[in-house]
Each structure stands twice: as structure tokens, then as C-alpha cells.
Image (cartoon, rainbow, N blue to C red):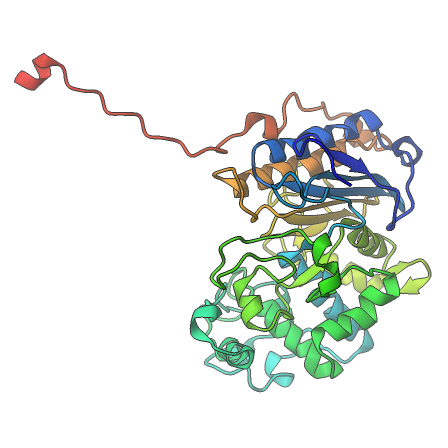
Length: 421
């Protein structure tokens, strides 16, 4: 389906995912939710991304499920449709695939969160690494560095894996929070060692297939390529990317790894979000027990839970989600926030790394995420506390603060009198 204007197009879908319901039927305002259109389209017209998929759900239903713009900037590109368009989830992989796999093994008793990583991966070697636990990896307090430029240092996936396993700690385990891609990678290998399956096979068998998330997985099939939003145009690999993980380290590691590489649709993610809101079960299928969900979403420290981020008025969670809300964001322009107190979730998928026309797409997508979460939360009408909050006069996307680099003013030319001095 082709739409005439990329900046104005929006598709309301009635396909896969959660059943649809009118906002008022689940205690939400239709007029306030309509602000979502303005917020998401503002990111497109600003040039941050060519299109987006949004799903907002409450009390078991999808109340806002739309596609905006196109998969790419080309006027002939396919329009975004939430139950068809597939996006590179980037760091959402950490929670949707890796953390959920850890939850399953923890519940089965085969994985001890307090156990040292070396109990499962003896090859995880280096000074002080004997004190790194599975929980340290989940909370980004392992002491591992943020990442490695593996595409420059490793020629094979096996070599790249070995470099991570032998990487020296930057801090003592447990000393402080340091967001790291390496920790989830190690977690993924722990899952593989315990289960005896590759991470993609385990997550498909135990999470995605049971939930009917047919378009979710690592290394998408060639048949799905035309439905996948393209990402980097000039990556170190040397060719434009579409259907291949954008993260260079994940690609070097083979495309199936704990920190990035998962692809999905917005409607597939709505099922996953509802599963967690339901306490680990959806449509009669139980993935984990409710007690396990509670354990992993309970804040630990540094605005982190076990694997998950905790909504704290930043990182795209907005200001009005409840203190029990949790979620994650992805570098490619993706985000998922879940508010169990309000039985609410907010999903945004974009490909802001694809030939952005804006000079600061990272700042724009952060504001769009923030406003989207705020609009969803403030659209709730059956909570007295939220009804007391005044509707914002302007949103961040209207203020557009720091969206364009500031230019230094030209120095004033000295006057003739000054020159004489």
C-alpha cells in the first residue's frame, strides 16, 4: 500500500497482535491519544526517521495501533504497517530475548542469579572475574567495559567471542553501574551452555513460537526482507543494511547474540508486553510464573531492575508513567515501556539510523519517546492522580530544543577606533 505523502501518512491496522478496543472502553481518552499522531509525525517531518510503528495497549487491548510514513525515505517505499513492518530492535534484544531466557532458566532452577559466571562459563577469565555473578551481568554492575570494536579486532565470530570472554574488567564487580553490551552477550552464552541450544533456537522454542510472535527472531529469512526497515547506509561492512543486524559487534559475533540482533513487529511486541502484564502468560500459554516476573522487574539500583530499566523520567519513559513502570530502548530508534500499575504499555519502532535527514536524530527520537509515553499516560482517565495533572501546553517535539546544532555567532569586527588602539 502506497501513500502519497510520507510526512502525513498513517495506517490504522486491524491485523495481528492484541484485540482492538476503543480507548474509552479501557479508561482512556481518544482525544488525548490523538496527540500521538502529532508527536510521531513531528519526528518524521524533522527528518529523524522515515517511518514508525506505534502500539499502545491497556487492560489487555490495543487502543492505538498505527503505522506512520514509510520504511525508507524513497517515495516508492512501502508504508509502515504495525503488524507487517519488521524493525531491527537493537538493545531491546537484551530484555525481550536474553533477559526472558534467563528468567525461564532461573525459574526452572538451572540458573542461579547469585552464582559466579565462571560456574557456567569457566572460559570467562581475567583478574577479578571470579567475583562476577549472573546478577552483576543483569544489572550492568559486572565491571565489564561498555563494548569492544570487534569488527576491527576479530576475523571470526569465535575469535570475537573469545575476546569478550577474556576482556579485563574496568571496575571491581559490583562497584558501580556501567552499561555494557558485553554483559548480555555473556548471559546469552550462559543460556546456550545450560540449555544446550543456540540463543535463537531457545528463544524461538520457549518464547516466540508459543506466543505466536511469528515475525520475531534473529537473522530474518530472505522472504521477509521487503518488510524490513533498512538501517545503516554506509556501515563499516561496506554496503547498505536491510534485514541484517545493524550493530557491528553483533554482526561480527554472527548475528545471534545477547545484546542485539533481534527483529520484530510492533504487534508481536504488544503480545510480549501483554504477556508480562498478565504475569507471564498470554492466551493460555505460560512463559514464566508471576513471581518470576515480579522478581525481574523489581528495582535493584541505578534505575535498573534485573535486565530491565526502571522508568525514571528519562531514557524515553516520559514523566508520568508510574514508579512501577519498566522498559528499555534500542539504538536504532526503538522503545518498549510497560506500566503494570496502569496495565499499560507503549511501543515505538523506528529506524532513525537510516539516512537521517536531521542533524541530531538521537535527540529527536529521545523527545519523541518521552512525549509518546507522556501522551499515553495522561490519556488514562480512570486514575484520580492523573486526572489532576494539567495537559502540557507544549510537548518536547514542539519545543525542539537542541534539535539543530547551535552555530557560534560571528565575531564582531573591530571598529576603526578599536583598530587604532
